[in-house]
Length: 341
Image (cartoon, helix red, strand yellow):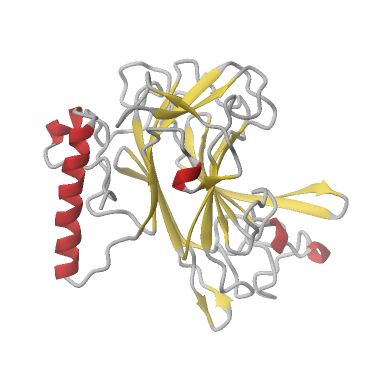
């Protein structure tokens, strides 16, 4: 019943980010679930949540890491947030991360969290990275790396621009790299190297070793939503609510259908929306999401000593109704084209 963390009965009550907000959330959740049940609707299933109020990560299902730094100085709800500090030149968070969390297999996955960046945040300083949240599938092992899989879905931002990315390098037909196999076979990759499966482009295709290619395909908001100007509605140094949703495409008559979904909300505003995506082909009809990997990563090393904080994480099968409440003062906004420096 804590599925709607961040939603308040009365907006002004959101100013209390301690214990009272949880009481409001429980009542709100009960009202929503009761209403949906009465209408015969199945509400989204909450797969897991973390308020990051203590460092007992393993007790909450996290594994593959013993790290994870909490900050009591920077928090949105509760007593602390999860801190990721990149020291200059570092590729990973200085205090480690909670790592991975398994969840029930699902065709669709939703994530929401609150995020804040240090005033000097510049990310990677490159047109790629940092990686943040990765979703892996039931076709991978419990400790699989994200870059070379049957499907990895990424939620992140580069140079202040929100993005989705996918990779499915294990599906590449290495004997026909560079050929369009979309009308030839379902035994192919959808994120690059074997053609454009859904009209969203061929994706990237590059050598990762002798006879081995990796790939990647992305969807971008196209504008900066984590900018430099204090007081602006898109200032990176304020708390913002991020929500993202992936739904795998269906398989009909043994073929992948162009009906997969990617959506991204920024402070409640839908800024990425595609409902004609192909994530999987008919060769893998049983592929489903079942793992979150939280592993912020800057491959070339952080250009400066910089930090971001995460709070109020929710993983579910769909977007709650009502959805989480954006931070106080947040409202639908026009994007800024000012790049992060």
